[in-house]
Every structure is written in C-alpha cells, then in structure tokens.
Length: 132
Length: 132
DNA sequence: ATATAGATGCAAATGAGTTGCATGTAATTC
DNA sequence: GAATTACATGCAACTCATTTGCATCTATAT
Image (cartoon, rainbow over all chains, first blue to last red; front, side, top):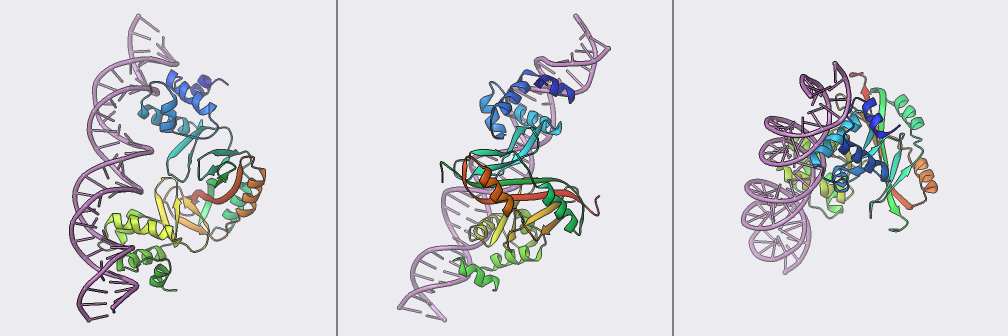
C-alpha cells in the first residue's frame, strides 16, 4: 500500500510534507526525533513535524519510543519490536522478535492490583562493536 | 544501615534535607518525580531536589525510571525491578522479579552489531482493578 | 469551481530540567 | 569546640523539548 493510501485509509490527508516525513521515517533504520526529521525534510516547520508525528501515532501508523535522554522518537509501525541502543554513540539496532508476551502474562497473573496489561516498553542499552 | 551512613559511605553529606528526601522516597510505594518530592518535603527548593536525586542516582542509591509522560522519577535502590502502571489513574505496582536476563542474553547472542548489554528498561502499562 | 475540514507556519507560551553564583553548613583538623 | 574547607543550598536566569493560539493555506468532497 502506497503511503498516500495508508494516510487516507486513516482519515488523514496525503500532503506533500506528510509524505516526505513518512519517507524519511521509512528510510532510516532507527526511530527519529522531531528535530532529526526536520533536519532531513526541506522547508518544514518543526511544529508541523511534531503535529504530523503525533497524527501518525494517533492513527497507529507510527510508534513512539523514548530512550534514556527522554526525547520522543518515532518510527513507522512495522510490527511491534524493541531496540538495542549504544550508550556511547547512540546507534540503534532493531530486534525482530519481542518475546515479552509470556512475561507479560506471568506479570498479570501475579499482580494483585491490575486487571489488564495493554502495553509495555522495553529497551536494551549497551555498547556496539565499534564503541566496546 | 541508617540513611545517614548510607550517604556517607558514598561520600555524600548527610544533610537534613537529603535525609528528608530519602525518607519520602522510602515511604512511597512508587517512584516519584522531583516535583512530587518537593511537594512532600518542607522548605526545599526544587533545584535542590533535582540535584539531590541526581546525586543519589550517581551514587547508586536511587534508580531512575521514566513512564510514558517522559518525566523522570526516582526511587531508592532496593534491587532491580520493573513497574506496572495504570494508564488511567497512574497507580504503580512494583514487580518483584525481573526475569529479563534470559531475554537479554538471547538478544545479545542474536545481535550482529553489539558487544555488550549493560542495562534495560521495561515497564508495563494497563488498567488497575479500580479503573478497569 | 466551490466549500470546508483539516494542515501549515509563525510567534509565543509551557514545563522539565540545568547552570552560575553567592551563601550556608557538614565533616575534618587542630 | 573553634577554624577550615569542600560540598550543599537557594535564587534567578537559562536551555531545550514540546504545545498552543491564531491566521492562512490546501487536499478532498460536492
């Protein structure tokens, strides 16, 4: 499905800037901050980037991730997954498998105070081959 | 070990405000933001709270956690663990067991680009009994 | 072509967290 | 137990990510 159809299928308009932003997200290996997106798209206001990323996330077309710096990052939703982040240079490696579901089930079963678990956030931090 | 000795063993001074801040952290079930700490301690500047929490973390006396709002929270280090957070009311339940280590080993083994994994962040989000 | 709801840009505001600097005080030394 | 000194605190001002208000613009439906 082309990006423009994806957007329209969620009730969002397929504007040139939106498409550029999505293409950038698509072309990068790791999740990007609003500022990183702005630096890669010609003539976009940072506010527009913020609003676009929020819209994409609200429409479930993008995931939100926060690494240790606390800055929000976005990536196109290509299935649920987690990341391995280098604490030295910041390189990000995507992990295909999630494998947290069994843990999640166990956590819910052992919980006294919770009825449902809908989400989880998991990130790994370490040193990449270069920085080690 | 009393809090004052804990501090001194890490080369930090046992000042009244520091002790108050630590007592508050100790008495609360979940991790607290700087602002939440300030609201519970008499006559402390927010800056002092920030600096104190950072010192405690640097000395490994406190853990840092970030939930979905992106705000940093602190809790006294009582062994590594994770949290279950209610997305509605914000209640936090602590999870005794971690159980991520085997996953971590597997992730490192499967990784092409990383040599070591030193840390991970894992939080679960759902609805507590009250809010469900 | 027109209408309209949604998208964009600019400026200004918000809110978490930080920094510089002067003052205060815990811990050490005599 | 008084003096010394390095660390701790408070205040004001700052930075930086993110948000909001408002006027303008434009993709999409009619």
